[in-house]
Image (cartoon, rainbow, N blue to C red):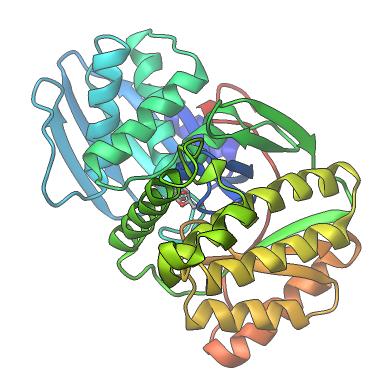
Length: 382
Ligand code: GLA
């Protein structure tokens, strides 16, 4: 359904329409919870949400993408031991009520376009869509940065994923046509236009995340163990953000193989983010592609978050003419692959990736060209 039709449908039922984009991280994977740097952009794939105020404090919510519905009372927000999609919504409501002010009940319906578990932040997009809509209905205004932090807290506390701030921050504060360099320690941002000669394409490997939450949380634990250990030798290390490759090399033995490789990924990836931001600014597509390839090798070998299907897709994509580099995107353990592509050949390249992957996977994959778009907001006119 196009945006005009969605808006007309919402209005006809007396509802307001909101949308939150997905995010594609160009580079800087698993660096956010190490207080490092990331370089995401939003993309024009949305969580669409229509909302109608109620006179009580109940939230009734249905999602057509998951073919599910549920309800809860704003006075009875409790955590579940076995969280599902609705716990993301409850978490957001809980944090908004506690930090923002009293919410109002509402009937909400959601239609998500972002592949779930694909590494494009379908969960953060849901959180942000819910947050901006609930705040609007309650007449509360909060800075986007604060909304991002509350949504991150909701995901950590109610969904049990010890995520960093990247996804929520990008979806709350990203800018149209631009990539965002975010320093996850200070939350300082710099934006760079994505040059016209560089196209970004995401292709779904079709591999669903295997144990994503526990795998993700394990990596976060390993990184903080490594940082604690390194602090014994260099007191300025408060997180892996502060470690240098020299320090890692000199403490390789004390770290042991696994923690050494995890730290090596994080430290080298932070440098790749800096280099990629420069490459974007210079319109240097080739250099960006090379950095993206190096990021993938590091995520595969040092951080160990790839899988067979993703490996096959990365290899296939990188062999296509016009592809300058590909890598797994998001948390990993399955999901989508991002390719940096020469924009002039974009149509043919997308077709090649899709056709060639179909020969090994047996079906044409979902493939999408990234168009960097606005943050989560109400859609009031088109
Ligand atoms: C998930 C998390 C983010 C980030 C990425 C990996 O998307 O939500 O905070 O850690 O994985 O870079």
